[in-house]
Image (cartoon, rainbow, N blue to C red; front, top):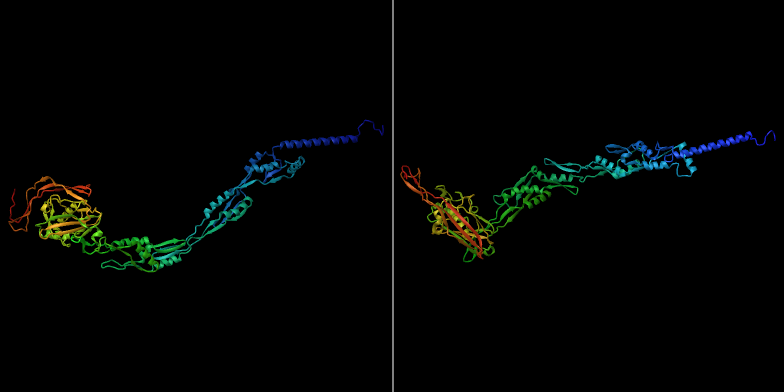
Length: 604
């Protein structure tokens, strides 16, 4: 035993040392337990001290942190101002396609304090607890959204260019000056705007504009052209006027301005005469300037087999509407205001120089005749005059011959006399009595020529003249212009020449048809007569102009009947070309007597 120390006894110093060691051990164990508990709690959580742009997400599982970010994170600021020429647009980044990606952002937050050596991880976690960390979010930028937004803005700020224009106030040409337009350059603006959006910085971005030049920049030259065109009236004349021709035609500027055309060609305004409007104007003049060509009239000389002109032919004329309109427009463009109209010569189809061989008029193909023996002088005169209207006519192939067309007006001024005409129950005196003798004779020539007869009217009563010397009943044709006509078609390939002749001694009227004989043959059946009726009692009529007590016979009685005439036309092979029937229904006509004052007509 030394210094009062019993062997085996623990001293105070040793007790203190052991106590400190135990305390240290306990503290280490407590620290390790705390670390273990901390790690266990945050195994699936973000370590404390982590924030995303100021929003604390430490201690939260990633899904809960994602919900918090979706709810609290906003991209409404900072605002971006887009400055235009007449206004501005304030817009947030979120409106321009900037989007938060919560998942990738929280993946970064979750990895903080992990993935290192355990000691480094503990140190990182301690730093997060002590100092904290604020990380930026993961964002995506959809540039197409910005482009779409800019395209919408572009529609609002678009300013269309204004082309230079020419218009008229009365006859004065006036000009609207050109003005450029503007439009948003979307792509250039997008390049300036995108960095501000992705940088999340407040900014004022001027919109990039493009100037749109007008297509038509100047109208002054066109105004000068129009002024020159309207400086004085336009006068239209005929270069070679004939006696009685109309004209000249003067179009004043007040009317001419309505025919001025303003056109844009390759960005240039031009003025000139509107040829469509001028054609419409000229078409109204054309009828008065039209002169039909006049065919020669011929006789066929049987001895020489040649045509002998009996009247000369004459050229016709027609206004060249299309050519004149173009000529007038060109003349006005040269500053000329007096312009000659263009006319075309129209040659006659059958000039007096034509030969029988050229026309194919080489054969006598038909003849029709009738007699007017005993006709009163007025009737005789009218027959002879009307017959001349058809002498020497040439009818073209395919043409429909109209008796009334070639006859013309039947008036006293035309040279016709009064004579008996059929009208109602009694004959009357009228201008042109006897002309039906001529139409009847023409009908007979067409009948025997085998021509298709397209219009024929029978008389209301039988006329004795038409049945003289074998004329036969039912072979007449009455006319009364313009509604009652006699027509046939020249269906031969050659023209048809009509000759008329009046026998002085015989009072025979003949129509001869010359053409090319195509071998056709005509057969006429005997007229079938039915429905015969007797006339009624005589008519007595007072005529104050007759001598007292006298009586004259005005007309003889004629019975009524229906006559049916059949015709067959055969071609050169013997086949039937036409088979037609002509029916005539004649009413009976009573005898008529005119008497003077004091005569007592019979009562029976």
